[in-house]
Image (cartoon, rainbow, N blue to C red; front, top):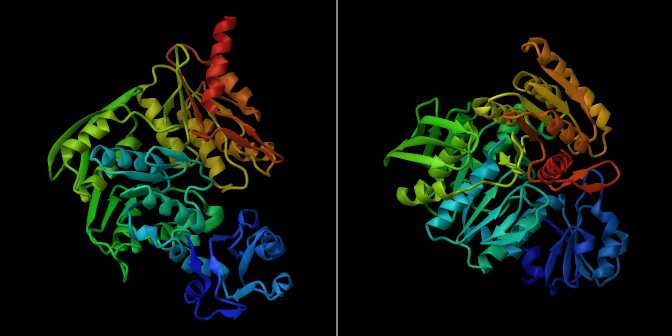
Length: 504
């Protein structure tokens, strides 16, 4: 993309400008390391880093203009154009979508928000739309997909520049749809600025991210922002819809913020889409979906009550997009799995090993309830909680592990800058509380080393036991205080099982 600086400056009518505007802008960046010749460098003030401190570096790398909130002596020479605004983050949200020619107006945009289930739901939607013959891009926690091209990700929802760049690439690659997870952080921080959503999906609402949002009400309101995006003044596209879980209390808030047709779904409430005749096993599930099309019996390779909700949400999107029910059924029944989401690990062992991303109280409870449905013997739980994140959920998750599991092995997740032992102390409070109300015969251990905890779980597992390794799912790394190491729960579990079989 190339834009004239004068065009970009026109989007900021209250800016103070020093320097020439007759310059070509070939890139926009807020990280000086990504600056190339012809870049507009945006100085963002963050919690730990101030972009204004890197203006000199950006200029050396070829920046021709800077967007600032405060004076920067490094840009005082006449060759650099300085655009000063009150808030560079807000200004960036206005400039960047225009720079990339508003790709979010050219794609059918489907946004999925909620505490849990976003990833699986987006993959299910992608599968259905592709089965219907559409070219689909996906942006989410695990990866970004442009058709089958895989791009790595840093955040559930990328920042404005990365997101608009990715959407632009999707447009240029012929994609018709962009299906994306939309986090509460992204909505609160304006990362989806310039995107016009056509369908918004609400999965569920449970405790998470209170370190950022402070209160649960703030968290709900941030999620509701996605639904306020629908049919805003100036919308370019028709055919908007909101797909909302009516079994969740927060669904009413999402519905009240949706100025468009609503397709509700539920299992325990009255809704447009419902499910019954549920049968959940380790290797899959079967149930019937009821809607305006009649009854759709499904036999799936994914399992768990939580996935029934995810499937209903995906069906709601497909119906909103006028996909034939026969195609929906075909896509769902051929869908296999999502990496790290209730993923079975097979290495010749006589017990079940499941790896799941569950890192919230509700997520952990869901997978434990599912394991409880088909477990023939003990449930052994390996889990931890991330450092530098919401501390209040740690004892809650500890208690849930003790209530549903027979043996709990509390360990490190991604401790980040926190001491693992301190995180585990918070978890242990909940484990002890859970054991006080649980039946006799349960036990727990605190093992900070995650590999050691997984090893212990597999050593303790007998025939027909279930080993649940929760918290990291698809992640192939572990973030420690001073470094990030390679660590994949699935790979580690396979290695340990094979070693034990070899040495048996």
